Length: 160
Image (tube, rainbow, N blue to C red; front, side, top):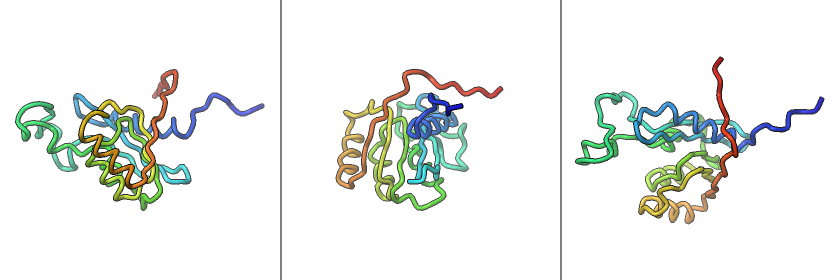
């Protein structure tokens, strides 16, 4: 008997872990997950966007508009930073998988941690100053940026 041929690639597997991690986010508008992998294809960090540990999901605002302190923006930790902070080893040379291209703040953390490649699905904020700054820094730091083409079909997880 030959091996099964329709299995997913490493890229698809790790992006799947990032997408599954995003499902832990309590953000009512945007759910982002991140998965960091070393050169041996071992997961060394995962994260999703949410408030810092110890800060109540019901005590801080989830709003996108209004006065700055009445929005989520000063409080939410992005998925990439959470994955870096949750990592279990030195990240030099690792790859981070994330559905949404990283903002400038996450790019700084990615560069400083030594991550050498970003694999992403969407770049829907490409025209914003935050992403333009991100790409400028990442390019100068020689961090590889690679768009992953999604699978032609959905993968369904069944817990039965």
